[in-house]
Image (cartoon, rainbow, N blue to C red):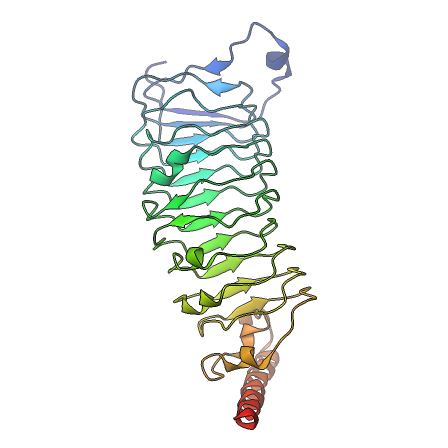
Length: 307
């Protein structure tokens, strides 16, 4: 099958394969194959690969993989690896042989306990999905070499108790989703590295007690999701770019006049309440903007009375 370039296998009944002791543990992938997509891949790994591969797209969702390959797979064209919902996966491979990888999806890999540190060398990686990994307790450092990383999703990694460690400016990281973890605080040194951040989701971080004051120095944050951060007691001053704060079920949170002094009360009313104007009648749009004006007037009045 040396001429095979595309292999797509939909979910099939593989119970016979799994029960047969004579079945091989791995699949011999043709070197010239460019696209491999196999839902519920039944074997433990891919073949041990010593020659360069032509793979561009590798998708093995719902697989029985325990590991992807032994050693370093050399595939200078590989852009996508999707192993989502591979519940038996226990470790990731060495990524040093896939230098232009753009998307890595390891979401719902509940048994995964280790991520190879070579992930920090992936300068082309844009999307890293690690959500719902209940066995993961630690993360490798996210280095400045990951200059293309745009989305980092770590939601519901419930055993992680430390915020990601960034070793340099993450100039492209705009979405960081870290909800459902066990963190208690966010180091100011990590916030300093997130210069391009627009969305920070910390929903269901029930042990989180505070946010660092230097969050004010971020250039372009737009949304802060704090839903059900039940131990969060206060908010620092926030940048004027923030449009939405979801602070529902933050039962310990105490609001103060400091929140009204953001950029001399120039914050719009929509910062405190989510609104998508595409889906509401014109009359409510008008009412909403009137409330914005009232909110601004009350804030100015409070400031004047305190000066």
